[in-house]
Image 1 (cartoon, rainbow, N blue to C red):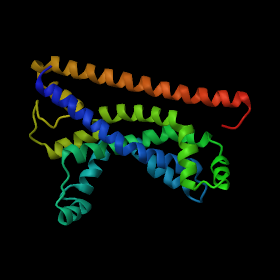
Image 2: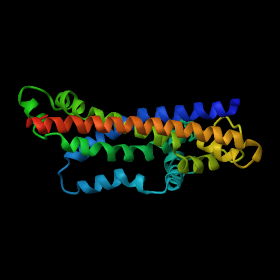
Image 3: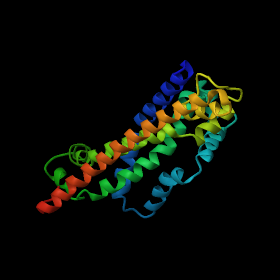
Image 4: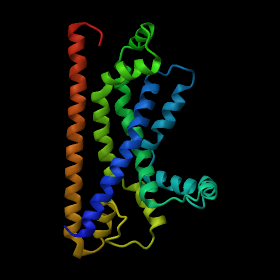
Amino acid sequence: MSAWELDAIWLSAQIALLTLLISTPLAVGLASVMAKARWHGHWLLNTVVLLPMALPPAVVGFALLMGLSNEGLVGHWIGNLTGWTLSFFPSGAVLAASLVTVPLMVRVLRPAFEAIDPMMAPLAQTLGASPWSAWWSITLPLALPAVLSAMALGLAAAWGETGATLVLASALQPSARVGHPEHSVPLALMQALRSPDNLGAATRLALVSVGVAFVAVLLSEAGRRHWQGRWAALRQRGSPP
Protein backbone atom coordinates (compact mmCIF):
# COMPACT_ATOMS: atom_id res chain seq x y z
CA MET A 1 0.00 0.00 0.00
CA SER A 2 1.13 3.54 -0.72
CA ALA A 3 1.63 6.14 1.99
CA TRP A 4 -1.56 8.01 1.09
CA GLU A 5 -3.64 4.84 1.31
CA LEU A 6 -2.28 4.17 4.81
CA ASP A 7 -2.94 7.81 5.71
CA ALA A 8 -6.56 7.43 4.58
CA ILE A 9 -6.98 4.23 6.61
CA TRP A 10 -5.44 5.88 9.69
CA LEU A 11 -7.68 8.93 9.30
CA SER A 12 -10.81 6.78 8.97
CA ALA A 13 -9.78 4.81 12.06
CA GLN A 14 -9.37 8.03 14.03
CA ILE A 15 -12.74 9.36 12.84
CA ALA A 16 -14.46 6.06 13.71
CA LEU A 17 -12.91 5.82 17.19
CA LEU A 18 -13.54 9.48 18.07
CA THR A 19 -17.11 9.13 16.82
CA LEU A 20 -17.59 6.04 18.97
CA LEU A 21 -16.28 7.86 22.07
CA ILE A 22 -18.84 10.64 21.50
CA SER A 23 -21.75 8.55 20.23
CA THR A 24 -21.75 5.73 22.79
CA PRO A 25 -22.59 7.74 25.96
CA LEU A 26 -25.07 9.87 24.00
CA ALA A 27 -26.81 6.84 22.49
CA VAL A 28 -26.90 4.93 25.79
CA GLY A 29 -28.33 7.92 27.64
CA LEU A 30 -30.91 8.72 24.98
CA ALA A 31 -31.99 5.09 24.56
CA SER A 32 -32.38 4.71 28.32
CA VAL A 33 -34.52 7.85 28.55
CA MET A 34 -36.58 7.03 25.47
CA ALA A 35 -37.27 3.48 26.68
CA LYS A 36 -38.84 4.73 29.91
CA ALA A 37 -40.35 8.00 28.66
CA ARG A 38 -44.03 8.28 29.44
CA TRP A 39 -44.57 12.03 29.50
CA HIS A 40 -46.95 13.72 27.09
CA GLY A 41 -45.24 14.38 23.76
CA HIS A 42 -42.29 12.04 24.32
CA TRP A 43 -42.79 10.85 20.76
CA LEU A 44 -41.41 14.22 19.64
CA LEU A 45 -38.09 13.45 21.36
CA ASN A 46 -38.02 10.06 19.63
CA THR A 47 -38.64 11.71 16.26
CA VAL A 48 -35.93 14.34 16.70
CA VAL A 49 -33.34 11.80 17.86
CA LEU A 50 -34.04 9.35 15.03
CA LEU A 51 -34.53 11.97 12.30
CA PRO A 52 -30.88 12.07 11.09
CA MET A 53 -31.11 8.35 10.35
CA ALA A 54 -33.91 9.03 7.85
CA LEU A 55 -32.35 12.11 6.26
CA PRO A 56 -30.02 11.85 3.26
CA PRO A 57 -26.49 12.04 4.75
CA ALA A 58 -25.69 14.90 2.38
CA VAL A 59 -28.40 16.94 4.10
CA VAL A 60 -26.67 16.33 7.44
CA GLY A 61 -23.42 17.65 5.98
CA PHE A 62 -25.21 20.65 4.52
CA ALA A 63 -26.84 21.41 7.89
CA LEU A 64 -23.45 21.30 9.60
CA LEU A 65 -22.01 23.71 7.05
CA MET A 66 -24.92 26.11 7.37
CA GLY A 67 -24.83 25.97 11.15
CA LEU A 68 -21.18 25.72 12.11
CA SER A 69 -19.12 27.12 9.24
CA ASN A 70 -17.82 30.69 9.33
CA GLU A 71 -20.87 31.77 7.32
CA GLY A 72 -23.32 30.02 9.64
CA LEU A 73 -25.05 31.90 12.43
CA VAL A 74 -23.87 29.61 15.23
CA GLY A 75 -20.44 29.05 13.68
CA HIS A 76 -19.89 32.78 13.23
CA TRP A 77 -20.83 33.42 16.86
CA ILE A 78 -18.60 30.61 18.16
CA GLY A 79 -15.74 31.81 15.97
CA ASN A 80 -15.96 35.34 17.31
CA LEU A 81 -16.13 34.05 20.87
CA THR A 82 -13.46 31.35 20.82
CA GLY A 83 -11.65 31.56 17.48
CA TRP A 84 -12.80 28.04 16.57
CA THR A 85 -13.67 27.29 12.95
CA LEU A 86 -15.19 24.20 11.39
CA SER A 87 -12.57 21.99 9.72
CA PHE A 88 -12.92 18.68 7.92
CA PHE A 89 -10.88 16.85 10.57
CA PRO A 90 -11.48 16.37 13.35
CA SER A 91 -14.52 18.54 14.01
CA GLY A 92 -16.44 18.26 10.74
CA ALA A 93 -15.95 14.58 10.00
CA VAL A 94 -16.52 13.47 13.60
CA LEU A 95 -19.64 15.60 14.02
CA ALA A 96 -21.05 14.38 10.71
CA ALA A 97 -20.36 10.74 11.56
CA SER A 98 -21.80 11.18 15.07
CA LEU A 99 -25.05 12.65 13.78
CA VAL A 100 -25.51 9.63 11.55
CA THR A 101 -24.25 7.05 14.08
CA VAL A 102 -26.14 8.08 17.25
CA PRO A 103 -29.65 7.42 15.85
CA LEU A 104 -28.55 4.02 14.55
CA MET A 105 -27.13 3.07 17.94
CA VAL A 106 -30.25 4.33 19.73
CA ARG A 107 -32.40 2.19 17.44
CA VAL A 108 -30.40 -0.87 18.45
CA LEU A 109 -30.27 -0.02 22.16
CA ARG A 110 -33.83 1.05 22.90
CA PRO A 111 -35.37 -2.48 22.78
CA ALA A 112 -32.73 -3.67 25.25
CA PHE A 113 -33.61 -0.96 27.76
CA GLU A 114 -37.33 -1.49 27.16
CA ALA A 115 -36.96 -5.19 28.01
CA ILE A 116 -35.53 -4.51 31.47
CA ASP A 117 -38.06 -4.81 34.30
CA PRO A 118 -38.99 -1.20 35.17
CA MET A 119 -39.43 -2.14 38.83
CA MET A 120 -35.81 -3.14 39.35
CA ALA A 121 -34.37 0.37 39.68
CA PRO A 122 -37.13 1.58 42.06
CA LEU A 123 -36.62 -1.57 44.13
CA ALA A 124 -32.91 -0.85 44.41
CA GLN A 125 -33.72 2.71 45.48
CA THR A 126 -35.91 1.43 48.33
CA LEU A 127 -32.79 -0.42 49.55
CA GLY A 128 -30.83 2.81 49.65
CA ALA A 129 -29.38 3.13 46.16
CA SER A 130 -29.53 6.48 44.41
CA PRO A 131 -31.22 6.64 40.97
CA TRP A 132 -27.80 6.99 39.32
CA SER A 133 -26.31 4.10 41.32
CA ALA A 134 -29.30 1.88 40.49
CA TRP A 135 -28.98 2.65 36.79
CA TRP A 136 -25.21 2.16 36.78
CA SER A 137 -25.16 -1.06 38.79
CA ILE A 138 -28.34 -2.76 37.51
CA THR A 139 -29.75 -1.31 34.29
CA LEU A 140 -26.51 -0.79 32.38
CA PRO A 141 -24.98 -4.24 33.13
CA LEU A 142 -28.18 -5.93 31.93
CA ALA A 143 -28.05 -3.97 28.67
CA LEU A 144 -24.27 -4.27 28.23
CA PRO A 145 -24.31 -6.95 25.46
CA ALA A 146 -26.66 -4.71 23.46
CA VAL A 147 -24.40 -1.72 24.11
CA LEU A 148 -21.42 -3.64 22.73
CA SER A 149 -23.51 -4.70 19.74
CA ALA A 150 -24.51 -1.09 19.06
CA MET A 151 -20.89 0.07 19.43
CA ALA A 152 -19.70 -2.41 16.81
CA LEU A 153 -22.42 -1.35 14.40
CA GLY A 154 -21.69 2.32 15.14
CA LEU A 155 -18.02 1.79 14.37
CA ALA A 156 -18.88 0.39 10.95
CA ALA A 157 -21.28 3.26 10.25
CA ALA A 158 -18.72 5.88 11.28
CA TRP A 159 -16.00 4.26 9.15
CA GLY A 160 -18.17 4.17 6.04
CA GLU A 161 -20.00 7.50 6.39
CA THR A 162 -19.63 9.24 3.01
CA GLY A 163 -22.55 11.52 2.18
CA ALA A 164 -22.15 14.10 4.95
CA THR A 165 -18.35 14.03 4.86
CA LEU A 166 -18.39 14.40 1.07
CA VAL A 167 -20.37 17.63 1.40
CA LEU A 168 -17.97 18.89 4.06
CA ALA A 169 -14.91 17.92 2.04
CA SER A 170 -16.28 19.62 -1.08
CA ALA A 171 -16.80 22.86 0.84
CA LEU A 172 -13.76 22.77 3.13
CA GLN A 173 -11.27 21.10 0.77
CA PRO A 174 -12.37 22.23 -2.70
CA SER A 175 -8.96 21.72 -4.32
CA ALA A 176 -8.04 18.41 -2.66
CA ARG A 177 -6.65 15.69 -4.91
CA VAL A 178 -5.69 12.04 -4.56
CA GLY A 179 -3.25 11.64 -1.70
CA HIS A 180 -4.59 14.55 0.33
CA PRO A 181 -3.63 13.91 3.98
CA GLU A 182 -7.17 14.66 5.20
CA HIS A 183 -9.00 12.16 3.01
CA SER A 184 -10.80 9.34 4.80
CA VAL A 185 -11.07 5.95 3.10
CA PRO A 186 -14.45 6.59 1.37
CA LEU A 187 -13.27 9.98 0.05
CA ALA A 188 -9.87 8.61 -1.00
CA LEU A 189 -11.59 5.74 -2.81
CA MET A 190 -13.86 8.13 -4.70
CA GLN A 191 -10.90 10.29 -5.68
CA ALA A 192 -8.91 7.23 -6.78
CA LEU A 193 -11.73 6.08 -9.05
CA ARG A 194 -11.36 9.25 -11.10
CA SER A 195 -8.05 8.00 -12.47
CA PRO A 196 -7.50 4.59 -14.14
CA ASP A 197 -3.97 4.58 -12.71
CA ASN A 198 -5.38 4.42 -9.18
CA LEU A 199 -7.80 1.54 -9.71
CA GLY A 200 -5.59 -0.79 -7.68
CA ALA A 201 -5.55 1.64 -4.76
CA ALA A 202 -9.34 1.98 -4.94
CA THR A 203 -9.68 -1.81 -4.88
CA ARG A 204 -7.43 -2.13 -1.83
CA LEU A 205 -9.31 0.58 0.04
CA ALA A 206 -12.62 -1.07 -0.82
CA LEU A 207 -11.37 -4.42 0.47
CA VAL A 208 -10.19 -2.84 3.72
CA SER A 209 -13.64 -1.28 4.17
CA VAL A 210 -15.34 -4.61 3.50
CA GLY A 211 -13.09 -6.23 6.10
CA VAL A 212 -13.85 -3.57 8.72
CA ALA A 213 -17.59 -3.80 8.03
CA PHE A 214 -17.57 -7.61 8.16
CA VAL A 215 -15.77 -7.76 11.51
CA ALA A 216 -17.96 -4.99 12.98
CA VAL A 217 -21.22 -6.60 11.90
CA LEU A 218 -19.98 -9.99 13.11
CA LEU A 219 -19.24 -8.53 16.55
CA SER A 220 -22.57 -6.72 16.55
CA GLU A 221 -24.43 -9.95 15.82
CA ALA A 222 -22.47 -11.76 18.52
CA GLY A 223 -23.49 -9.12 21.06
CA ARG A 224 -27.12 -9.28 19.95
CA ARG A 225 -27.22 -13.08 20.18
CA HIS A 226 -25.62 -12.96 23.63
CA TRP A 227 -28.22 -10.48 24.82
CA GLN A 228 -31.08 -12.54 23.37
CA GLY A 229 -29.69 -15.72 24.91
CA ARG A 230 -29.43 -14.11 28.34
CA TRP A 231 -33.07 -12.99 28.30
CA ALA A 232 -34.32 -16.29 26.90
CA ALA A 233 -32.59 -18.16 29.73
CA LEU A 234 -34.08 -15.82 32.33
CA ARG A 235 -37.59 -16.27 30.92
CA GLN A 236 -37.22 -20.06 30.92
CA ARG A 237 -36.27 -19.98 34.61
CA GLY A 238 -39.33 -17.85 35.24
CA SER A 239 -37.36 -15.41 37.36
CA PRO A 240 -36.95 -11.68 36.89
CA PRO A 241 -33.55 -10.61 35.44
